Each structure stands twice: as structure tokens, then as C-alpha cells.
Image (cartoon, rainbow over all chains, first blue to last red; front, side, top):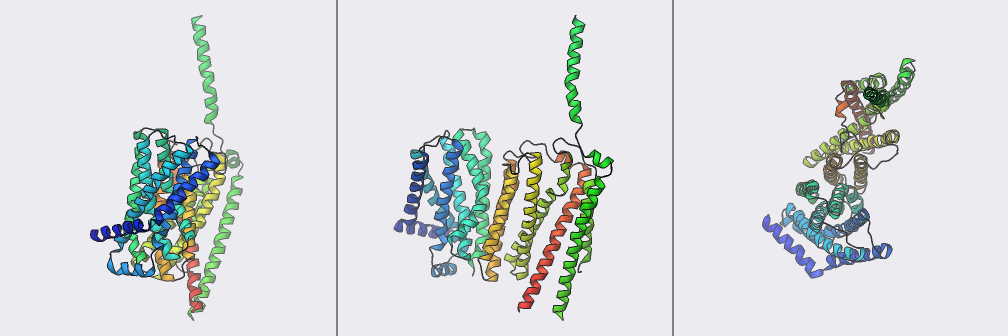
Amino acid sequence: MFNELWFLIQKEFRLEWRQKTMLTGMLIYVISTVFICYMTFKRIIDVPTWNALFWIIMVFAAINAVARSFMQESRGIQLYYYTMVHPAAVILSKIIYNAALLISVALIHLLFYSLFLGNEIQDMTMFLIGLLLGSTGLAATLTLVSAIASRASNSPSLMAILSFPILIPLLMTIIRFSRNAIDGIDWVMNASYVYVLLALIGMVVTLSYLLFPYLWKD
Amino acid sequence: MQTKKLFSLLLVMILSTLPGFAQDQIEMADLMRSNGKIYVVVAVAATVMLGLIIYLISIDRKVSSIEKKLKK
Amino acid sequence: MKNIWWKAVCIILLMYTVTMGFLGDVPAMAILNESIRNLYFHVTMWFAMMILLMVNLYNSIKYLGDPVLRTDEIAEESSRMAMVLGILGLLTGMVWAKYTWGAWWVNDVQLNGAAGTMLVYAAYFILRNSIEDEQKRGRIAAVYSIFAFAMMIVFIIILPRMGDSLHPGKGGNPGFSSYDLDHRLRLVFYPAVIGWTLLGVWIMNIRLRIRTINKSLES
């Protein structure tokens, strides 16, 4: 199974490298959104607004990015995988690929966001850890939801409807965590959020591993 | 003089606790209960509840009768 | 009427709730005053909702193991009843909040958690409606429901303990336990939870039977 997983991850990255559609698409989306925000706000000094806007842009980018992960594959390819590999390998490879994609998008997003709208972050390491965990959490949650949505009907609106309510707990935790990072609050206070985030990610990955085989068979 | 000061201090202390005494008396619907009007509320609520339950029972029976008809 | 005994239990417990809920002794507390009695009518809605959502979870897991259509029907109807109870809980909560905290909606983790739960299950119904095939609908809905339930648990149980909440027992507020332990309240509260849950199960049961009738009429 690990060989299959490794092979599938390589395949995802190679495909991305060859086409470069996803990453460039996401970057254009993020940069243009940030630029629109810059033209409306100029500079955001208020920390809660800065933080909330950052994550809202991130969530929309993530939903757009991950929604395609199951839709771009044709029925034929999916059937081929079905006969060749373990279903858990498919979902895990997609989660890992999406996490990598979202982390890179998040970093570039942070770069442009702080360039245009100002940077008030006091504890940069903590914020980056939050960015890492948050992107991974978004990727893991949205990958399973996109699998569900692609099975139901291939409409992108269904993906948004299904994912927003499910993302709320993750978003609330990550927004509070990164706000504390911006305010430079001590690790002792903030560590519990890291545990919650790690537990959430662990839970989502386990659930994906357990539930995806049922979505798979048709 | 000393005793007078002490006395006034004591007085202030006692007076300051008085509002505390007043707060201990939390207002409940004791009046309603003492004049028996609370039973009116209970009667109304119980009637509403009973009415809804009787309606639910009648729906249940209707469904049962349709089920029986279908079996035939 | 079939299975008359639990329906009788339901009626007895509910009648007990509406009479003893008003007449029973309650501890006198500031701000809350007599409104502590809402414990029997508002808080019980959430408890009944949670129990019905657990019925949904159980049937969803069961359906994945053994796809029988009836199991999926029970899962759908239980979550539908849970939604009704949830809406009632939200509305009654708003009224109670207005008179204890001074606003119809306060920014409270518990309250937002409840609203988020309603959104999750609204999405669940939209998902169900978008799939035609019955077997497939059951399977995909079950997957979403299990996933959503896990997230919801995080939302309404773990998160409120981390932030400030106006609700008792959270964020430095005096716990319900200080008066929840009060046997006078418990004496009505637990029977009320069972009574309201049974009422939900009863309505659910009738809806399920109507579905069966409809199906046999179609065939």
C-alpha cells in the first residue's frame, strides 16, 4: 500500500508540474483578491479584521483548489484506479498533495497579503505553524468533502454548501490561534489550540481513511 | 473619642452589609403560588400538551388503520 | 396503536414535565429567577436533538456495514426530527437569552455551535436531494453524516470549553453542576429529557410508517 501511495503522490505532483494549471490558477486567484482588498482597504491595522480577511481568502482559495481534485479525473481513470490500487492510497495521496498545494498557496498568499495590506504579526514562527496546520486541516477536510460532492453531482456549488458548515470548527480554532500569534501571546496560552488542531487533522484523516472506500465502490 | 470612632466604623460596616441582605431576597413567583394562580398556568399548559398528544394519538391510529387496509 | 407501552411512558413523562415543571421547587437564583424552569423545556430540546442525532449516526454506520434501505430511512427521519427539535431549541434559547443576557442573539460559542449544527444538517438534506439513486444516496449521505457528526462533536463539546461562554460551566461561569446537582431540578429534568425524546421518536415512527405506506402504494 505504501508503494501505491508513493506512486500516486508522485503522479499527482508530476501531473501538476506538467500542467501547472492548479498552482498558477490559485496564485492568480489569491493575488487578484488581495489586490482588490488593497484597493478597497489600503491598509488594515485592526488585527481581527486583518486575520479574518486573511483566512476568508484562504478558505475560498482552498475550496476552489480542492474541489477539482476529484472532478478532473474521468470516469474511466477512476475505474482503472479502482481495479489497480487500494482506495485508502487514493484518498491519502490526494490529501497529501492538496496539503502541499495549499501550504504553498498560503505562503505566497501571506507574502502578498502582508506586502499590500500591512503586517502586524508579532510572533512569526507561531503564525507560520498556524498556517501549516491550518492549510493541512483545510486540505484534509476538503478532500473528503470533494470526494462526496463528486459522487453526488459534479456541481461546484454543492461542494461549497457541504464544506462551509463542516469547516466552521476548524476555522474558529485556526482564526483564534493565529490571532493570538499576531498579538504575540505566549506559547503556554496557545499550545492548547495546537493540540486541538492536531487532533482535528488526525480525526479527519482517520475518518477519510475509513470512509472513502464506501464512496469508492459504485 | 476612640470609642466613638470605633462605634461609627462599626455602624458603617453594618450599614454596608444591608444591601447585601436585600440582594439575598431573590424575587421568585411566590405571589403567583401563594394566591394559587400558578395552577391556572399549569392547567393551561397541561391542556395544550394533552391536546397535542391526543391529536398525535389520533394520527397514529389513522396510520394504523391505513396500514391494516393495505394489508388486505 | 402498536407498541403502546413506550407511548404511554412518553405521555406520562410529558404530563409530569408540564405540571411538575411549573409546580416543583426550584432553587432561587439571581437573574435567572423563575426562568430556571426553562431547563425542562429549552435545555431538554438540545438533549433530545443530540439523542436523535446519535440515532442518525448509529443508523448511518449500520447502513455502511449492511445497506438495507430501511436503515437509511430511519437515519433520514431521525435527523429530520432532530432538526425540528433543534429549531425549537434555538427559538426558545433566543427568548431565554433576551431575558437573561439582554439580547436575542449573543456571541456565544455554545449558541454558534448550535447554529453551526443546524447548518451541517441542512447541508445533509441538500446532499440527499441531489442524488437520485437510492442505494447511492444512502451510502454517500451516511458518509457525510458520520463525518459531520464528528466535526459537530468538536464544535459543541470541545470548542466551548476553550473560549469564554455565557453558558454555565464554561469559560469561568458557575457550572450548572452547582445547582444541576440539586435533586429538585434533576427530578424533573431527566424525565423531561426522556419524555421529549420519546415524543420525537413517536413522530418519527409515524413518518416512517407513512413512507412505507407510500412505497407500497407506488408498487
